[in-house]
Length: 404
Image (cartoon, rainbow, N blue to C red; front, side):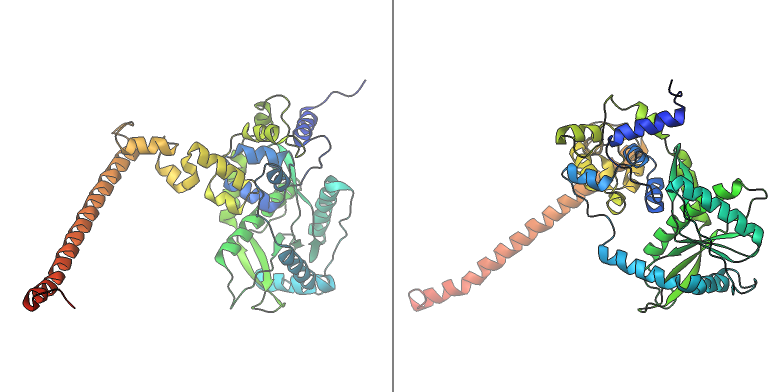
């Protein structure tokens, strides 16, 4: 008799059915989790990411191919720079950690670089946890190259692979994020630094889960090391980035995510997101899960074009941005907004309705003023044209005929 299925086993089986029996799962990474946490109301992304669906392949099958992602050139350049930073056992990387984050500690002249090889992500995560514990007890500089961390996301484990984690002689842990965009005169593009900070905050959360299982729990530093090329060279430079704010926001958003099994329970029987399904069936499966589209999704989700088209078709105000959606209260569609602005519906005591009607009045006044100015300009033009014709008529009368 086969062993009874536990709730976790049943959920994994259900997610495999949603993904497709022969479709391999696409692992979540920190970038995807940061984007998922930034839009916690999107059940569509939560279930697709939780089931390991490759959203880029799914977007192609839906007829809305995505341009989201990293170019092959940028990917190769990033790998080459990371190899340069970690050369010679990570000597230069550890020097940067010592200089920027822990100058009071002894210099990292003899650092340990443990092997983290294991079978499968679960095995690698367990091997990483063991290496972290041993490094904390050894009280020496230790570099973990591409460790594997597990983070619980909406009831399902996500396996994450940071560029590096450094263990200090005092037993504390630091996340290292290596990026290929340059630091010019000690500063980098704020938008790219912000994205790197949010990604690093996910790694900090995962490290905190590992540390919580140890006694005593090691300290996970909230200042991460961001390593980038210096100016326009291939030489590495670094900056300490405090991610406490990003860590708090990401942790709060991930905690608010609807549990994946709750979303799966609401789906129709037989729902499957396998890309080889007929287009109509696949579209119906995707549309059975509510989405929360916003323009910010274009830079963070492979299904953004598909969701945008359907959001525009339904007239959802989120198409115009989350900030505007927040200002409109209970008005969720463009038709409702226009009807409220024209006085056809809506409670006049509602601040959003009152603001819309006042804006409509101001718009009508502005259009009337513009029309009046346009008409006045047209009259002046006609008068000027009539005055210009008078000398020619007078000339014709004086000569007894028309102009020759």
